[in-house]
Structures are given as structure tokens and as C-alpha cells.
Length: 130
Image (cartoon, rainbow, N blue to C red; front, side, top):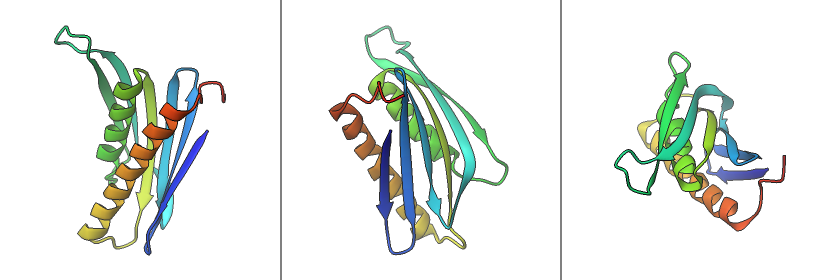
């Protein structure tokens, strides 16, 4: 399992990545209260253009009133394409009274975690951890 964390003065975000055979199970949470706000499932496949490029289809489930769906979708898609596997992402980050600037900062920090996860997955053989 890979555990990554980013901290700011206002909040922390944690990402857990569990390898399940060739597939990945990811959770992203933080802020004032972690929860499940959205779940994404990405399934990699050959690009429909006929080339050897890998693409992915993503399905989303979103809890009413929550806004994490685009973040869950982005992470699931990126990892599925990068590693040609199936990826599930559960995401829930809550900040009481978050400003637009804070929401942007959450998304920036989550992007940083995603980049770190890609590097860590490429560095090591995590497929045997489960």
C-alpha cells in the first residue's frame, strides 16, 4: 500500500493506493472531515482510434450535494491510462465554509498527490502487496 499526504495551514489530504493484482484501489480524503462523496471506476482499453494508445472509460457515482466527482474521475482516468488497468477511486474532502481559493488549493494538492502516486507506482513493485 502507498500512503501519501499533503498538508497546508488549513487542511490535510491523504491518498491511499492499494494494488489488487494488476488493478488499483484508491481513497482520497481529508479536510475537516473525510467521507465518501464520489466513487469512480475506470476501465482501461485500447483507444477507439485503432492505434496502440490506451484510453479508459469512467463511470461515476456521486452522493447528492457532493462535488468530488470530477476529482475522482480525473484520478481514476489518469491511473487507468498510465498503468493500463482497472482503477476504483473513492473520494471525499470536506472543508467547512470553503472559499473558491481553498477549493482550488484542494484540487492543486490532489494533483500533486496524483503525480506522487504515479512516481511511487513506477518505482516499486506494489502488485504483490495484497
